[in-house]
Length: 285
Image: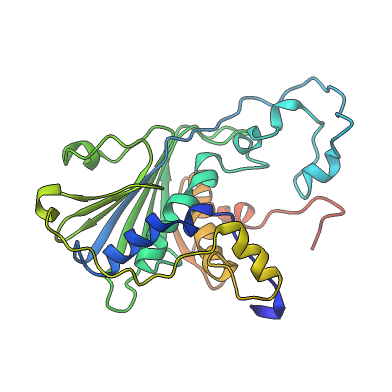
């Protein structure tokens, strides 16, 4: 814990038992080396043009504080509580909502950190709103004895063709690990080795990952100086960075070559405004 500072990303599912069992299966080599992962979420957020009417701010809301460092705009109820995710000044759509929850499993199981390249496809960018769907392709380097990984993210109803081609269950949101010996499908509470018949007699690997005391209690204990959270920023920072890079690739329309050390898209100056944007007056760091 650097400078005795407790940190935690709100990836609540990280504290659950199912993710632990999936990580153990992957790291025990049950489906062999993995170089391909597909992650999808049914979530979809989008916004139209900015509203022109200016209703009064409710008494219970500090609108300036709610806006924070985002560019100023008049209050409108269409932005909140949860609909802010559909506006690019505030959120990153389905990618920003669920990437960290589902791709958490891939990052944990495969020891992923910073992608080498990122490219995205989606509908034509809207000047105000986030895209209702995205497909984002990431390439991660080899990590020690682990091979390079191609991870593809889908949201807004998009799915990997492999789900249907392999006859996999019709899960609306999931993580699919593709290994040399088979596949592993998982979501928040379920896991399935595929083909099922091949793994019917499998003895599960030992449960080596300690159970969590619970996401919220982890935070309280860390604040009291009793250890650290499992989703502290050292782990969750690169996870969040990868999610945001999907938006950078989408907005630039380019395949991004990512220099993680310097936070730069190599040879792509048009990405700079999406990587570092000016903070509103009074909110500068």
